[in-house]
Length: 346
Ligand code: NAP
Ligand code: ZN
Ligand code: ZN
Image (cartoon, rainbow, N blue to C red; front, side):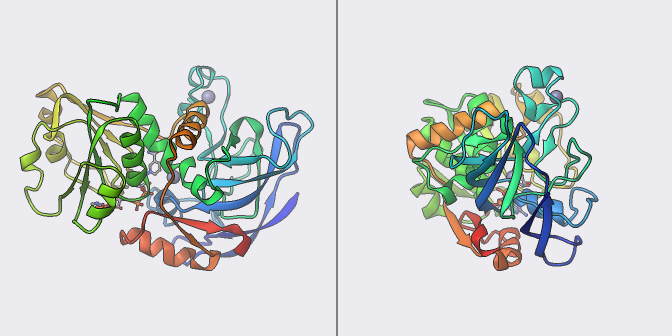
């Protein structure tokens, strides 16, 4: 066992605090990673505040992890000490179900092992990336191309793949009109990636406050949706909508902005159930879909795509003792556009 420094939650309501946690010994197929940076995803906040249901405390979250390989197990062939690597939202899966065999381990029938707050193969609860080190099975460790600076790479491991995957799946590209709803961590990556794929992008944000940023990221338009009826003039506008909002939203109004056969793909995960009229998809043969992260293969493809196309998130680097403040600012929408923790400050 390796005792390492971390920052985590001891209850759903208390601030996160410095903690010491145990990492397992490096097994034959394991990689020990010295973590350099960890991004703060809104899912970390939903989890520790128990907005998605009860969890086991103490809990260290963080699933946007980058660092260097510090040690490898005896059977590891794909990673070497000193390599630049990353870990996203999964650290293992059953490897046997139809989805795992097809390379869709993020859809594992038996539930993949999440990077945090998940039951690991040894029965312990996984602890995430707000920590100095982590031990991960080699198959769930990604290569981080040298073109991407370390702290810029971290948010790609969740925000990057979560938006790249549905954009690729639903065919964002030249001639396609894409709307991105919510300009936060996921949203701003969706804009940059969709623009790089060749789509015409419109940002749907609550206010005009981020308009200059939307245009700087390559969007053609930024529309403030806060006013009642703001979407009315956008009927039949979009082929694909990527919804990243972390809170309830008006599904019917957004579906009306799709062209026939268009798809509204949800990646945002508000804790509440939301109402919708089935007629909103029946007329126009529209698709109301969801998407969660992406496979390991697709995550590597996304990292290579971002390196090749010079795509990187906008980040604000913070020391560990500002994590609680960063949580409050993220919930308040005051983030431009991803907080990243410097783990040297743990
Ligand atoms: P974030 O940085 O907080 O961004 C969310 C954005 O949603 C905000 O910037 C804001 O955009 C908009 N928003 C927030 N509250 C709102 C409200 N009350 N009404 C309307 N719009 C609101 O969060 P994130 O890290 O991008 O994560 C977004 C969601 O995706 C979370 O629910 C998270 O759990 C989920 N998620 C899902 C996956 C997956 O695999 N499906 C992966 C990662 C995260 P504007 O200010 O522009 O309006
Ligand atoms: Zn995430
Ligand atoms: Zn499986």
